[in-house]
Length: 575
Image 1 (cartoon, rainbow, N blue to C red):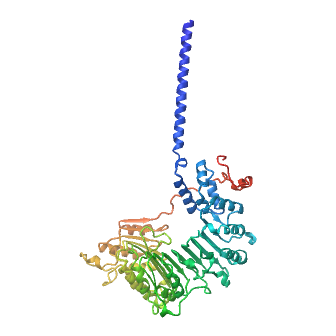
Image 2: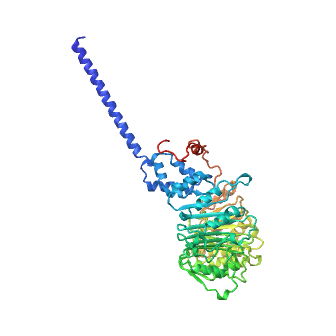
């Protein structure tokens, strides 16, 4: 090979290598650029601080874990630089974790430090370990009370075992101004029911020296704050339950308190008042902003209180009465005012026991949500001689507001068979809820269900299961003429259901869908039902369940880090 040929070949190889290097460098640049673009699009790197903190706070509130409440937020601060900086620069998040009963004292101090000047949410609960030894409550309570001027929410549960250690010292500490306090919850847990100390059960009128944020939400359980306290003046929410007789205010005294709370929107009273003797001289109270009202207790005291209370903007009403005697108390008068203000009843539930009647109404789609009732009546320990009269009167009172009801849940329990005449009771129900399209029947046995189906399977002017004319006005004489869907929760077949379906088909108002619960294993019965309606569903009991995955908890060992870090903090970027 000549020198010129060798030179040309070498030059060509060099050129090819340069091209390869250029392509390699170009590929690396593209990969690096793609990597930078991908990292820039990661949510943890680009979420705005305000949105990220809302996510942190939502997860803290909705998924609280056991033990140290700060562990979750401390773990979040170790995910990446952005999360750490966000967590440490959010005093509000740390201010929500001041729980005296489950934070080790050293971490309790760190939480207070990171909360800075943000109003604190402090929780004091009794917590005892084996042998009655207290964990962290004592030192943390004293530490928290030093921050009394910066506490925005205070939740205290006192125990009868803490009278000298916690309760009395804390009451002394609480007689100082709390200018940031807006929400106060005080509960007293008297396990033996033998605590009669007035200084414990009734807190003094000068608590917090009468200086708060001003106080807007007050919850008292098994204890009372003197009704002369100025803390009541600016309340928007007041809840009192199971107040001891020795400190329970009379109805006239409590009405005087309500006169100085014009901004009250939520009021809940559960066994909190005692009747006044001077009924004739009691002046009524008008709460123009009251939107939610709950009253529970003996019928006499509840009736006396409600008869002196007026409101114009009510959206939720709950009434729980014990031992209602219709000869002395008119239930219609008690529920007439709230019924006139709440929205139409569209989803209702009626339960009947031996000596108990329950009625509630909720917005459609919120039937299973606790505390979502718009209108709730619970009558307990009803005298057997009056239960039928009371139930019929209640259904008659709500019939005008039930004309738009589309979903009715009916709870029937056989222990009431001995005291309720079912036929007349069911007819009364059917008249009031004639607009119902979906009926859900809850029971433990078929006996009351059979009685119900028999009662609504004929018109009031004919015998059961007789053939009626098929003219255009026939549906007007049929019980529950708009009923289309039926949900059953009993696991036994009933010939009365077949007869009911046959009757509806003869009337030209056949039931469209029926649903049976899990475990309803009667193929022949389901087959007969299918021949009488459009759709039959039996809930399956073998639905696939996702396997439980074991998650490793070894990523963050906070206790080990605490021992290795005297500052109880982590250096940003180290982990």
